[in-house]
Length: 84
Image (cartoon, rainbow, N blue to C red; front, top):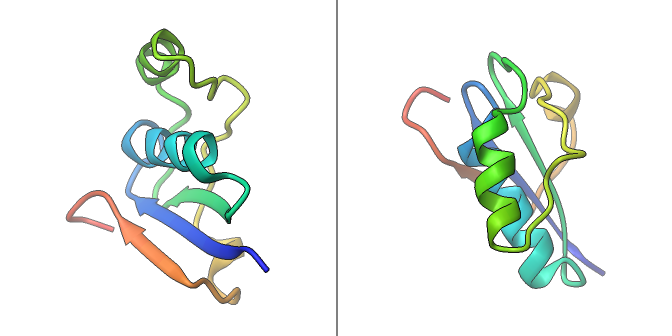
C-alpha cells in the first residue's frame, strides 16, 4: 500500500507544486501525493517552466484549497512555508 503525502503551503502555487512534482517523478510508485494551500492563488507559470527544464511536467497541476483534505488521513504532512 502506498503512503499518502500532503505538501501544504499558503498559495499552493510554487513550492508545494514543485515538491509534489518531484515526489511523483522520483517515487510516484511508492507514494500517493497531493499538494494544497490555505489560500490558493493558481499555479505559478515559472514553476511549470523551471520544472519542465529538468524533465518534470507539472503543467496539469491545479492549485487547490486544503479544505477537502482535512478529514483525510495522511502518513506525512509536509509544510513548505511558515504560514500554513
